[in-house]
Image 1 (cartoon, one colour):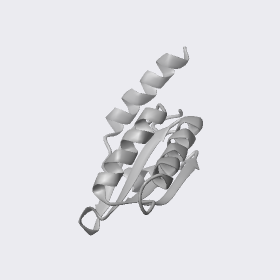
Image 2 (cartoon, rainbow, N blue to C red):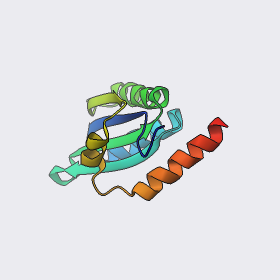
Image 3 (cartoon, helix red, strand yellow):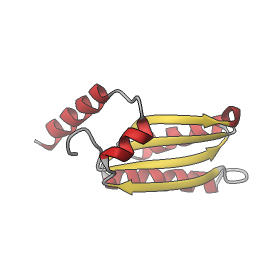
Image 4 (cartoon, rainbow, N blue to C red):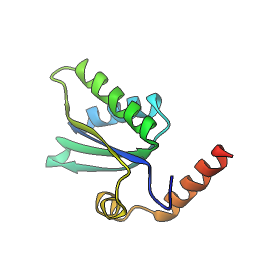
Length: 115
């Protein structure tokens, strides 16, 4: 990780809040990622989950969400993508008021693991 950014972010758009909670759980269990934010639209009928981490971990989490969605009734996953090396301007837009102090702590934690 460099600066206060992630190597990659994963964006998963899913129908219904309860499905989003389930898929976030699947993603967290599948990979070492950090939940960054969620956006609910239409009263929770459409939820966007955003996670961050290394490219390989985010890919694994997004893939797990896709697989889990395929096994659910009417596959609730609308979009599931990995964005590698996201630009800092994108990060400002995506997570807006996200606590940059928390991002810095995550960076320090990752740097300590690499040592």
